[in-house]
Image (cartoon, rainbow, N blue to C red; front, side):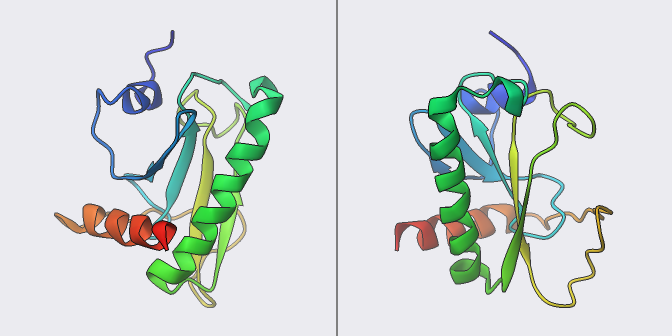
Length: 137
């Protein structure tokens, strides 16, 4: 059993602004988002990288990523999304995670330079609630 920060979030030991949870996956807002509404999706059970992902978890991971990408449009007015996964290099936490980032034309994101922003007090939970509501609809 790993004890990385994402394992702790998956076990409920650390707080996170969750937007979705299944028996095998957890989706929550990145605490340093590229843009507000930036979601990370992780397996509940520790998986290091995409190469270690059990085949039977690939489809559920991508399905949840697709659902969240759609919800970002409904919840936040995003015109699209950027979906990405790092493996070892640039993987800030050694636990597989899929980024789903809301995008809008002219948002300033260029290539793989990811400027980061911060949520104001209480704002992260409000974003999480909007995305959860959109996922339910």
